[in-house]
Length: 130
Image (cartoon, rainbow, N blue to C red; front, side, top):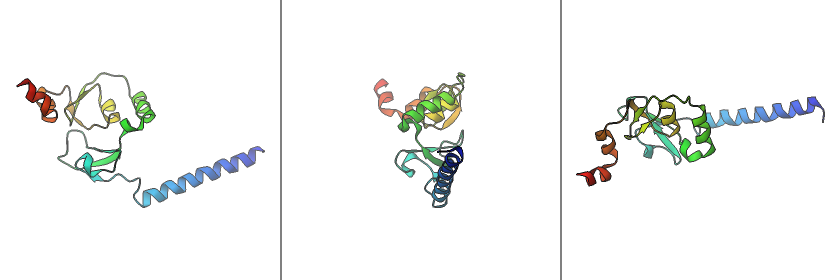
């Protein structure tokens, strides 16, 4: 097979993929839609909110990277290894905002979560301490 045949074949595969992607976006399969919790999203998706909103405003459904195995590892590798802790809407503290996003969590604020924030989401463990 000569170079021009390989180039035509590669170009055909590229165009086929592009057309399929545009079609799926047009019918809404790949488009993110508004949500207020993970239950508003399709299976294997999570509701991601704008930083600091935590459900006060609608978020968008996105694939959950934690459920995608290699994609989760790839996501973490793209993050800069800088320790700037953030508290997420579920009361978990992550090393930085990028890692939190890879974990499928929305950022509530910069810094560590307080015990109260964590207890709002893990009531069973906190009630054992009382």
